[in-house]
Length: 329
Length: 285
Image 1 (cartoon, rainbow over the protein chains, first blue to last red):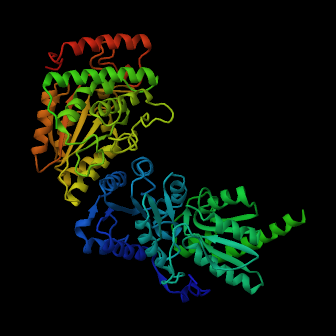
Image 2: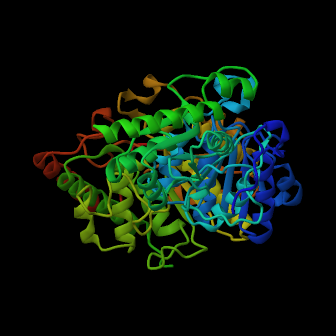
Image 3: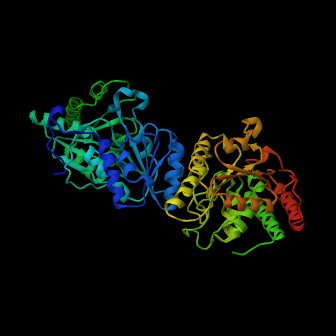
């Protein structure tokens, strides 16, 4: 199994911040590949790049608060034959340098990795300006781009090393808050291969990032009422694993998507696009619904904006009802 | 590398201008003034300055030229073709479906180092290539050609600040100071002066030249290469539309192409220019 046992209560889970996984992944990858270079826009410690900087000072480039230039410099390094990763908060990169990512990186098909840290609502008290809820949408729309949204710290580390082994632009988003570990450290990570964490026939919950944990909890809660909901960790938003997604959608006939991102244009939209073409079944989407966030703790925000296991349970019940209704029509 | 006499270089630049007019006429859209204005600078770069091998466009140690103001694509293509990167007959395909000669440069065309078009992006990429030389222990130079109006982009100054701090000595930026942009004269639309002082304040060495004096451009590039502690800016004062009487100095020709009749007149002007065979004295002197 690629997942670990997940306790129903967050306090009982092993909590690790995904950004820690990112920092470890960078060091691990850099040890293997001497061409890896890190660029950072004045957020070295908070993105956990400081270990990389200490170990490889000659391969660390401080960009200052200049994300547009960072994207161009990373493209230039890649075109020169290096393997750069540019690092900042997701609201600024790719939030602020989308045009540079589009032309200098994607249109060149430059081998640049883009790390969007502090993604999602759970960055909390900093408020709406700093909560990246649009980054998946603006990255997945770009040709040549790969978009990764790993489920926890363990998987973030694996995603970093996998990203460097993949040629071309790759975007990896991850959060700051410590969150439950759900992935088995010994499991393999394959870009573009969605993992079925929990099997089930009544409905399938397709989640990414922090919502994978919430979905696993939701599946356990549903199990107590006799509903068998499958859970898929869709860590690769692009390229989408259409095979696994269509197979499970066809098998269950009811789909719930869950992401810490705007519903509009995000991972759920990608699923919806795929299924509407090949397997149109009822879909419910969990995510932030066309609104900005606000200051608060991670837990408060997930509750207020409808991104908890309870919300997922209700969405599963709704979608199963819709499925039955559709069958009786 | 083959060496050219000054009169041979002047002939090449006149030929490039003639190619540009033919390409623009065939394409039916694109930019006229900038490409004509920078033809002498590009001639100096591709036929005297750059250490490159057109038959091996991906050679690791080649000097890189980044055209940040991608709308000068016709000039880049005409120069690359004449330098031997691809057959000259390709020039007629500019802006046509299926052509490698895109309206703005794409790096699938041999000799194009990076895709450009949105202003301000090329200088950052050039800075990255400049750092790449140090990290990979290579000794190439990086040249980045920018327009003057491009200096209005914030990204340009992020890159200029970074290159100054990091003493990117193998980086030479070249600004086409022709004082026109789409909406009018640059100094009216959004003034840049004192441009030289701004670059110097960011720890750059600045050289000013007459952009139609090929000798001056070559000398400035050699000086730039010899300066080891700073990036260098070569501020090239140019005449937009240079060589075609009715296009010179006019913002109206920034972003449009000649009609068949105008192209005939342009070719007549350029033919006169070329047959003077290098005895031209630029208006800037």
